[in-house]
Amino acid sequence: MRPATVCPDPRPMVKPEDLLTDREVRQLMEGFLRGKTAVDADDCVAVLVWAQEQRFRSLLLTWVLDGSIQPHVIDGEVCLGLPEGAQP
Image (tube, rainbow, N blue to C red; front, side, top):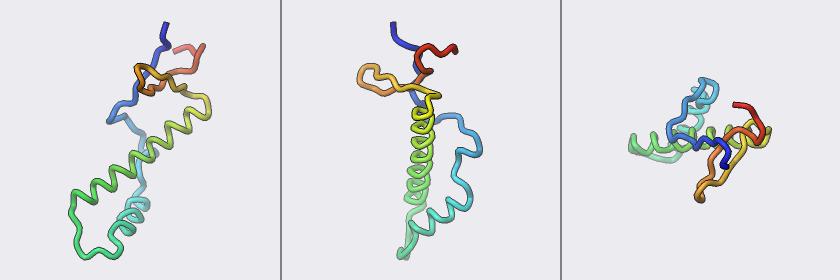
């Protein structure tokens, strides 16, 4: 019997503290724009999306490391679920 698992949704529900702060966005864009004379708005959005994905990955790893969630591999895909023996 397989454990109850949840695969990460490409658009997870987030709490405000999980989002990039205004300061982080400003720092990220300053670093991205440094030395450039022109940029595409889509490139700026791509950098912001990438940075937010890194934040989510960091949170997921933190939760795995502290035992709040447990990784399971199903058909070659890593999914996350409650730790073995946990009550839903």
